Length: 403
Image (cartoon, rainbow, N blue to C red):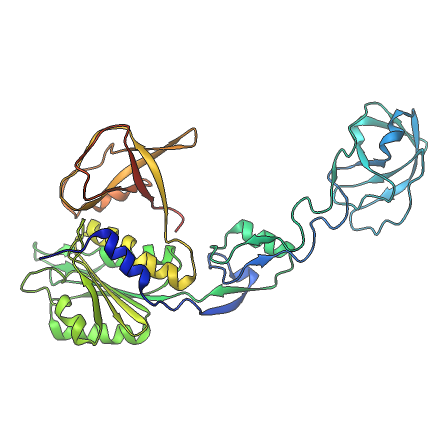
């Protein structure tokens, strides 16, 4: 069987026509974890006027050489201060307050002694001390948060400061997930047959897709029955943007999925990619919907879901990239096990801003070992032409956090 290269498969995936123009408006407090559908642009400066950044006395810096200054009164936060400070005068001003007209410096309370309506200056400060200038935080017209950003606590806070009551966010793509195979047991099921194994694929992938911003339809498991799988796929595609199945896509007598997909009326984009793990995968498109038939082994299905499902989800959400990829230096030798592009679970260490890769506690074995992805693992990419990589070689690494 001929396999297309990983690079070709990714280019073809990128060229697929994906609907990325769907959005809705949600309340700011309901937008956490959603993906912005528009740039967030500042309408005004922050702050809009010189502002005190601590409690103290607003003064003219040239007056700090005087022994005493007369206190005109208080200037609490939120007060519309209109007094004009004259020579030899000061106003007690609090954190967040507008600086009085004529004042250019704030001297902290700790630096003065107050008595009988006057302050004695014990320690001077530089010009402009503890005064936030206009636009220190941002300027009017500045893009503060870009479209495609996943909204976190900082984005919530900034948008609240901009009085963004409603937020325009991308509609979550709906992804249906099913694990096929008569040998698998769903969560909570029991069997006396020792040949049956516990399914984890549908739960692993559902969690992965939700983390990436999708809405998941959990379909559980299905036995190796062509008609049953066909019916399940038809129902799933009626309600989902993407259908992801695991198992049944290889070359065995009971691998029905690869035969069912064309019968659904879907166009097979490609079947078989030169990667390890997961070369027997299938990508198909049916109008605006997509089908991804992935291998059944746990590690294989997870890796291929990252490589092929996450880019589709990202495009539907308007995100620039599905995951972060960095260059890292090998801390130990690495020998490839195949002639294909390999994706190997690894540990990433950051030292002085530089990424390093090692394989400590990673088990060398089959494509079923999902535990290799525990403990904040990453995926090291070794190209088709790579064979033996010495320690110190730079490699590409896919980080598996913050999708």
